[in-house]
Length: 91
Image (cartoon, rainbow, N blue to C red; front, side, top):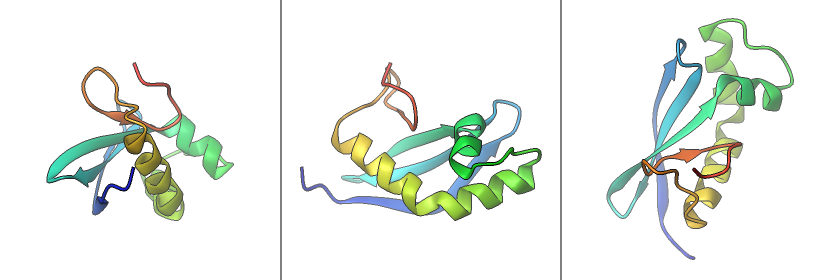
């Protein structure tokens, strides 16, 4: 598929739920994309002990995360709520 998928700069960290959310825009619709902090830490190759470290890790890996999310969107790997979860099979 040759779809135009854009990502905005806005990210949301939910420290209690242990995930990051970032949004893709596809045909004018927001597609919520998530990665757990555990998954992010594995990709960053070090623990994430605090929110500041989480933000640094996300920013350092942003390009790769957005590329993976784009691929999952193109594969229509949405969960039952229409979300994309990096590192998890669609539910």
